[in-house]
Length: 60
Image (tube, rainbow, N blue to C red; front, side, top):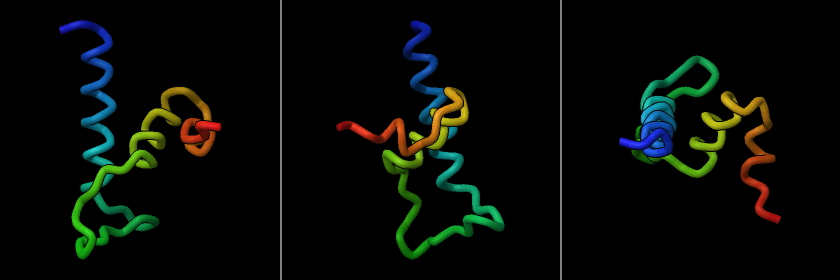
């Protein structure tokens, strides 16, 4: 496994965990199912890159 593949899997695992584990500030909305969105992944990357998630999602 390459380093980039390992990083991809780490980001994916953390994004899935973030979607699955409810918190007081973000309770689980099970009616919508457990969905990992681009915003979920951006929040994980934002924590690593010290950038706001919105900046990582800005494609323009």
